[in-house]
Amino acid sequence: MSGRVLRLVCTAAVAAQAALAPVGAMAVPAPTEPGQRPVADLLTDLQKLYRQTERATETYNSAAEQLTRQRAEVARLNADLARARLALHDSRGDAGRLAREQYQGSSGALSPYLRLLLARDPQRALDEGHVIGQLARERAGTLGRLAGSEKRADELAREARKALDTQLALAQRQRRARDDVQGRLHEVERLLASLSTEQLTALAEFERNGTAEAQRKLLASGAIGDDRPPTEEGQEAVGYAVRQVGKPYQWGAAGPKAYDCSGLTSQAWQHAGTAIPRTSQQQWARLKRIPLNELRPGDLVVYFPEATHVALYLGDGMVVQAPRPGAKVTVSPVAAAPVLGAVRPDPGGKPLAHYTPVKLPAGALNGPDTGLYAAGAPVTSAR
Image 1 (tube, rainbow, N blue to C red):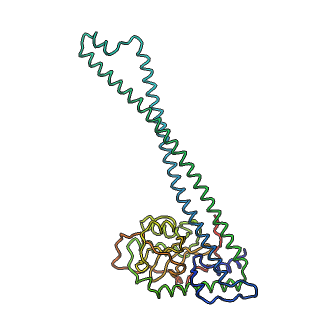
Image 2: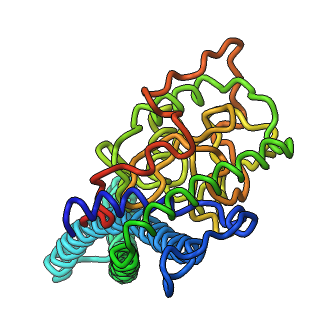
Image 3: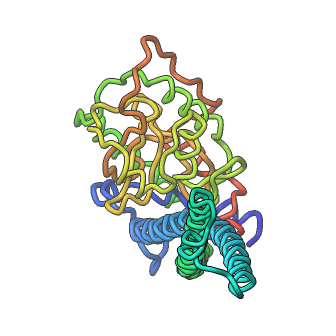
């Protein structure tokens, strides 16, 4: 694809998570030429493809996270197994030594009972018997350790094999998700490449108007209340996210040079000192849910019924997000996509007594979704 076409594509290839509701509420522009599809239909198709891509990306991220944990588990089990085999080797050595001692001392030896009866000094014989009993207990302990070491080694070997099988299955799942993402991104590229200059321009304008209308309705509804001050950790998360504005979206990426949506939010809170789940679906499932009218900077806004997109709330009805392939980390209206709800990574945190909003990069608020139309951004991120 030429540089000129890429610029046109990226000018019109608007956010994957753009609101569907405003599309139906607005007058649908007529096709620019006979036989061309309406812009609203094109936008719906693009939104569908981007949502499918983001869903596949979250599946990939989830598999990647599980695979990382599973590899650590396999390594731990292998280390335990190595120690168990070393202990088994030592136990077998001790058992062999006892067997040799038993064999070498068996010919011509009297039993402890006969030695006690024939002894000139019964007390000494009793002392010797105590020593012999102690040796017998040591032998029994050695044999017990041998049996225990064998059992433990067998159990760990089975666990290690099972863990490795799980690791291989997760790796296969990750490869399938990767292929799914790449296939869907190629579908986006084909659709965008088929559009005329007029269609691309109309598509971008239609998108901007739809987002602006959705934002107006959301704010007018009172669903988002007055801004509340963040916690110190929330302030740190916001500052980190804002410093990433302008960096490219790349599916499966979690910084520092590129991000996908949940890669940005998870890293922002990691930087603030609070570890949260990696994917948007896990963030929605595991973090404390809050009403939209209680949002404070640093909270996470989750989008779509499947919770496949997430952004970090800045305040004043705006979020910072890594929106879609081909775009860059940007500041957007909170209603840039259908909102599912909000979650709070630090529900027990104490809000700051005084809060100065984070200074945004120059030009970040020059209209709806500024930054989504980044010239020269590749549609498909190389993996």
